Length: 311
Image (cartoon, rainbow, N blue to C red; front, side, top):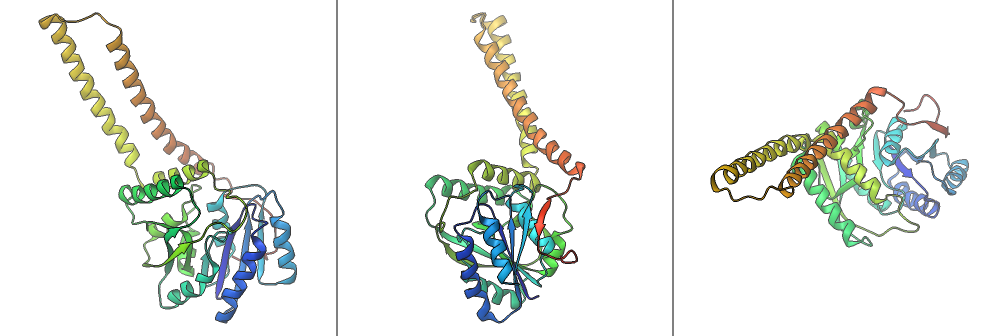
């Protein structure tokens, strides 16, 4: 198998058929052996039925059906586990990652690049809030992590078999695929494109899911939040010491003071707030450690047409 295309799907019934047709138009002219691997991530619409209908008439269509929604990054990981191609392409199922770019990505892969990712030049049809938060997240992540993660790039890319096999050896549950690929360290190149707006339907990637993904990326590849909690503790201790000196000066030297409740409450609330923030940050890291220690399956497959020996 020359190329596997992994498509995580969550309630994309309105887009699956169009995506399939555009994939065929893009890949078939290359003249390679390929498979289209749809991963149904607990869809509640007709996405799975449409995928199974495509698989019944096209042997290149394979699918994995999860028992529930495990998340996009887990769906990609399941596809990587089962993909048979020497090259693996990853793209979203909402047609915001144009399938027509796959031939050019594949051509650059054939030039010897282990990782070829698509970098967004513009993003059409997205709110100013989403654009601003995405821009902030990518640049913040680049600054605070110890690995070089490309900015303005999602999971739309082609990777070779060696990168895929290495990813399969990374068992953490808080998946952040683009960060893991950067951590591995293979050379990367990119192709710029203008990202179109969603074809039909509504995105299943809510703000809460984006925040969760951002937290996974930050906590998996940076210990800066822990350092900030430590530094803030010293800063607050220093401020508290200065307040203590001022209080003693007012009480015993200038004698200009009002026995008061305000300063006491402000100090208590300020110190308590910083402590709670620090405990929360530490708790995030401990929670992730706890989830990995449980060693539960990363995902559970309800149904698939992929033979057991594949992947």
